[in-house]
Length: 454
Image 1 (cartoon, rainbow, N blue to C red):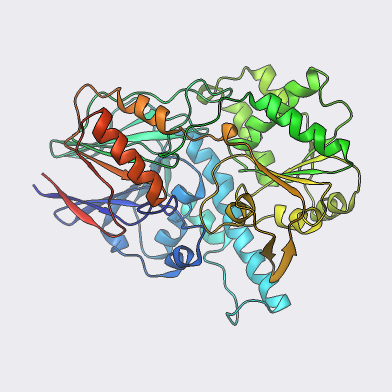
Image 2 (spheres, rainbow, N blue to C red):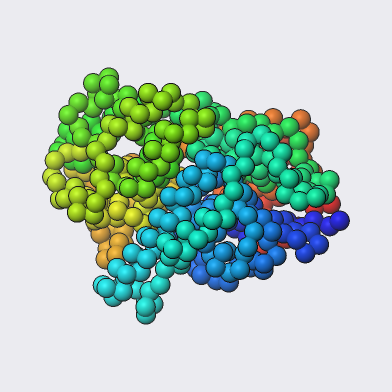
């Protein structure tokens, strides 16, 4: 039986993860993510799906970040009627992330129409909150490390990948062939998340390369946070941290709580201005098997911040001149409440905009980290005079060395290793390292490329 693998996302970019596995008219889709960053990529979200949704029997999600899980509402709108399989943690997080994604898209469209800065008349959401909730009825949780039968000749096994709560590597066995998808690999010895679990064999491997050309700095994240916050507060400024609501926010709260306990953050208030991050933190403290923190440590970390729920309180926080730390989504400053904080705090040299991980090309985060002197928000250009920092050591992604460490867990080389989910330079750098250090056959696929798995 012939099996084909097509790359409909995360090829040449770090977003839009979609891998279609097909055989004799039947299809399984691994990941179903949104494109983010450059406009040419975001426009793909609006294009017709490049495959027939009715042919997809099952969708498998590696984890809940929207670049991997944000498209099931679009698939469901297009007549997909199968199951969406994932870990329990991913299902719990998607339960808040997908409706929030739809809600924000509706609000952004409403805001654009009200202020007239969209080129579209009218501006529309990609999908609505109601459509996202309809897609959630398709989700089915699958336990880690247990064989799950998809159909007569296909099985699924999930293994913990670290990275964020519920993140998984996917092993798909179909008609005698084993295909492994790394998902986003976490870091070894991460302060909060479990180590990624090794895989012993695969005929074909799809591996991420987000940090394929980089090594994380060997700097203590607590020391780095203490230095940034202390310096900023010392000059009367505010630290704004655009952070992913799932994963980085909880890790930041853990480190900030440790700094408070040690007396290094005395009298510096911390605000968490993201209802979704607050809900994710509750899930984080409930699903204890997916991370390293004890129940008491988790509760302490998640309770150090002042939670800001209402829009009115968020606006009041923006206008409050006192030195403080604000954590708000999104992590690459692509949307959400953090944009209003950036409009207020980015023009002032006393403040600091602090990023905590990878910034995809074409995002406001990438522009600021690269030194942009202004960013466009809600149709207007906002000057960036605040100090901009990015603490890469806080990233939840494995760096190049850690990816190689995970790959060395294979007892035999895959026939082919496909390197995806990275900017071109990162993917090619990882290809070279794998070929030279492991001697494996590697390919960096292009968007839309279709290969036969012999």
